[in-house]
Structures are given as structure tokens and as C-alpha cells.
Length: 164
Image (tube, rainbow, N blue to C red):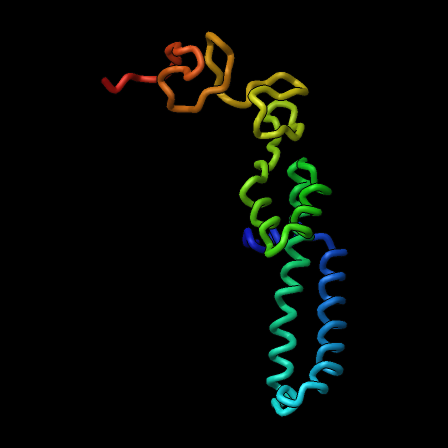
């Protein structure tokens, strides 16, 4: 299964139902009432009216589905999902959704020892104490693989060869 399909499965069924219900009801109402009142639009062929109405409402459908995705994705990332959902809804022009994608936390990963879900920011598992990232032997802070020295205390890190 593709990554896109996996991410589409994150969107709750309620969001899918709400989006399609609003889409079809709005399309029917717009096609029936306002299209008949404007004389310029009334002269359009039926297929032109359908394409216009359905195409314009696809933006609304996509917005509702994106807000549903923000809700479910923030929840699975153990973020403040209610706050992010309101921000996605209320900040105009989709900027709230863009902010969510820029600021979201990484997905929690299972601990290699106890298999508990652990936030990616943690250096040690809060359940069993297993090291999740390499640490400096002198100060105990997290370091990146490939670093020769600790950025916090300056100590040489073991297993790193000097290129000088």
C-alpha cells in the first residue's frame, strides 16, 4: 500500500461523511437555486454548470478532509489535537493547516526493549530506561551519530575516528 493511501486512512470516517454530505447538498442547492437566477449563468450548457459547481466545491471538500487529517494526525502524534483542529479551522486561507504541517512533532516510535510508544524527543524510555539515542559518556546528553565531540561538554565520543 502506498504512503498516500496510508495517510488517507488517518482521516476519520466522520470527516469523510461530513465532507461528502456538505459537498453533495451544497452542489444540489447551488445548481438548483442560484444558477437559475443569474441570466448569464442560465445560458451556460448543463455540463458547464456541473463542472463549475462541482469544481468549486472540491476546494471545500479538500478543506474539510484536511482539517479531519489534522485532528487525527495530531492525536496519533500525541499533540494537542483539539487546539490544532481549531487553529486549522479558524486561521484563514489554510494558513492554520500549513502551520500544523510545519510544526508537527515526529511520530512516536516503539521502544526497542519494552515496545512502549515513546516520543521521539526522549533520550531514554520513560518506562524501562533503555537508551533511545546515543549519549555522551561524560554529561549524559543526547548526541547525533557521527559526531566526534559532545556539543554540550566537549568530551570525545567513543567509536568516532578523527579525520585530521
